[in-house]
Picture (cartoon, rainbow, N blue to C red):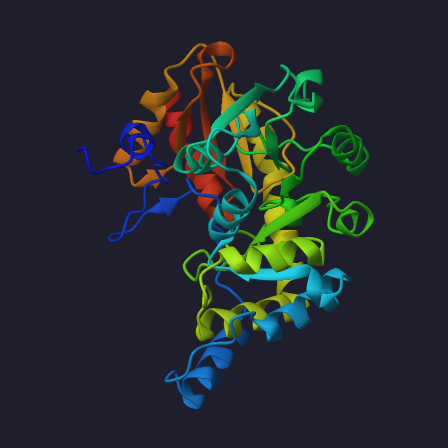
Length: 352
């Protein structure tokens, strides 16, 4: 197809996790929240519908910016909303990285970063984590064509994280903005939001797909210096968030009781889920996210994934061919206690 840009024709494209649409199943493959979102969201959306959807929404989602600013203790002008955090990541990449320039990311991590570089006709520089999931010195090395660095923190698929001190040290060493992708930070004991106020080149992204139970809504946001926000606004779609998503996200972030109770439940389940998986023979690492990364050499992990799928239990089988031990693992989302007990019973039966 000569009419297609060469870099688009050659790229494999990002492949999302499986999304079963019918039947009864246990879905533990895409790190969604296992609980229904705040009941206040329905009322907020209904009120928005009653007001009418015949007008364009607020292009800057200012009601959300104000509510988020109060929760996160940052000025509203540091916040910009997007159609999911993937939209935000696209905007950031388009803003900072041009053709033949370089975007850096750790490996293994979120593969969408590489896809975004390929769309731009840019180079993606993958720097492997050390065996214990720390950054190697090469990750901090400046280069003239390095325009943006992505760091998921906590990381996927490992669930591990760097400390705030390590993030600051990294930002000081880099010649370009450092995007700390905090999709899973609400399940961790610390985050980097306040660092945006201290260091202009630190940018934080967040999503509502995990801790707020709104994966089906598509809403995310970025926290960055206002000078950067002004540039992002030039790149984003004019109305990248619709009126219903703005109303829902504003209601969700304002309901702190639902949020705190839900995150606490997920963390409690995660804390007993990991040792239970270890008892079944899986190698795991401490997770600061809402999933557990599981590896082992004595079983075909793809076979376990397939046998679970046959029983309508979905986990994520992931392959990182440039990673240690062949790069295979199962990333298992934290579900409800009942879902995890069923999962463990089925895995035990498979292994026996």
